[in-house]
Length: 88
Image (cartoon, rainbow, N blue to C red; front, side, top):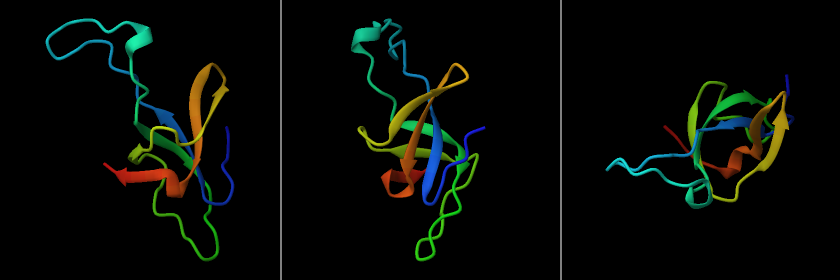
């Protein structure tokens, strides 16, 4: 498994919505990038900045936050703790 270093976290993004509230299907080209996900792993933090999030937390993050990676067929984001906006 991937182990983030310092103040970085590994996030599994939530699936994009494929259907509207009224029941219409959204094509892949029109789907928005999800801004919510689940933390899979978190680094130990820095000396002057302890980690406030932990594995299992549901979080909201910025639209352009993190670096997308693919590991064992799944897509993840690696981002700094400061890119996380809120814990849900």
